[in-house]
Amino acid sequence: DSGVTQTPKHLITATGQRVTLRCSPRSGDLSVYWYQQSLDQGLQFLIQYYNGEERAKGNILERFSAQQFPDLHSELNLSSLELGDSALYFCASSVASGRTEAFFGQGTRLTVV
Amino acid sequence: GQQVMQIPQYQHVQEGEDFTTYCNSSTTLSNIQWYKQRPGGHPVFLIQLVKSGEVKKQKRLTFQFGEAKKNSSLHITATQTTDVGTYFCAGRNAGGTSYGKLTFGQGTILTVHP
Image (cartoon, rainbow over all chains, first blue to last red; front, side, top):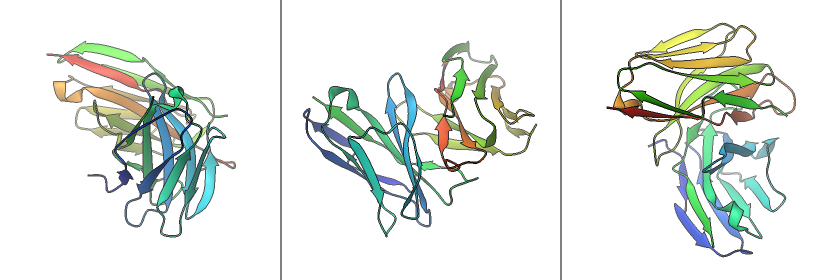
C-alpha cells in the first residue's frame, strides 16, 4: 500500500459527460501529480501541484482541469468526455517538488462509452 | 518540451538471461528515477540517481546515470519470472519553470519465459 488513495477505482460514463477523480496523497506529502496511462502511450504527465499551487503542466487538454485543496487532496475534472479519454488515471504524491520519489495510487480506470 | 525516450519497447527473455533497458532525455536532467509496474498494478519506485556517472546496485539490478546526465540504463542479471513487468525511467528537468515535472519514458515491457 503506497498510502496514496484514489477514488473511484472504476468509472464508466457516456460521451459528453463530466467526471471528477479524487486523490488523497500520503500523509505529509505536499506535491501531487496526475498521469494518464493509455494502452499505447505509457504514462503521460498531465499536471503537478505543490502545496496548493500549480507547479508544472504537461499535455493536459483544455477539457481537463485540476486543483489541490488546502487539505492537500486533489481532484482532476474531465469534461465533455470522448471515447479517447478512456484510460487509467494515476495520481502520485511526493514530499517535495524536486529530488524525491513519487508514490502512486492504484489508479482510476475510466471507460467512456 | 522535454522528451524522455526509452528502448526497447518490448523485451522477451528466457529465465536466466540478462536484460537491459535504455533511457535518453532531450534535456539535461536534475535526476532520474526508475519505476516498475507489474501487470495490473501501479508504478512502484525502484531507485533515484542524482550524480553524473552514478552507478547503483540493488541485488541483480544495476542502474547507471550518464556523465552528461541525459541518459540512463537499467540492467538485470539472470532474470527471474518475478522480474516480469514494465520498467519506466522518469526524469526531472534540471531547471526552468517546470522543475518539478517528472517525465516518464514509454517503458519497456519485460516478459520472462520460464
